[in-house]
Image (cartoon, rainbow, N blue to C red):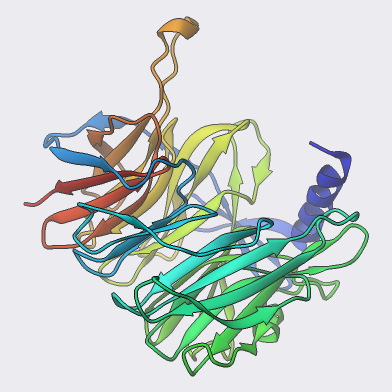
Length: 408
């Protein structure tokens, strides 16, 4: 890692930790640290054992495309769906039986950061351009494209050239939309400050509403250093945002005001505390929030399913060597999840099995898990969608498309 990268990370963590005071205890096993602006939930993960499921799934696997590096997928119904890498987007109109690579014609130094469709025809795509500049972290611009034919053609709606990095876009309907990410502040070194854009006319005009989020996130130095990378807008009355540094933010007035619901930090067994690795929000059938977190890399491989219990305390249930990527609640207690299972041998590298994509099942709201399907691929599943009463689709990093049934 380059010295400048290390310096940037160190300064960001200093900004995140700058306002913390002493701890107090909250019911449920989590410590909460109070500061001037928000409560910090220091999670002590409860390690659980991955068991073999009572009901094993028969799944049918196929390929979306002969590329690697798939990062996003969405299905609006059982027939229409999209899956993409940073440079390509594929579409199916027959439930994954066939896929077509869509024409995008992106510049060489650009990549797809997110996409979202409200039905089989209308969707939006965000593209980030990172030009090669002398100063590390600068040279960012973003644009928003719209399609009315399922992704067959795209029209640019808006361009943001001033160090804007859009990472997520969501629409509630054909008019109301949000695009979140960060604006890079050109200091020495550069740092991210949270960014939020909204539209009320389907993307024809975008308004910068970042100040409403910054008001909830600013530290004692007046800085809202963070990056908004996941939005849940499944209910008209509530918007939820998960940030890169583990903040959960909510709005109940269409984004006019925001409140920090929780700020997570993970206390590892070695004693160090991390605020990174929070990926996605999952809501149960009662609207209660769970958070998918974990690690895949030099620090190790584990998955955390963070639950907000009835006493409003946050508890993390952790699977070692099985990072979660996505989940779907079937009821307030039953959950299906997907991810990757990493196998570790007892020292004999030659006998070590490659990793596998995995589908998991829980009947206690994510507190314990059973494996019900393991992929033929050595890549993980990152997307899981319920498309019928008992029918599910999963998509893997290497373009594996899994179709399976799981019912009562």
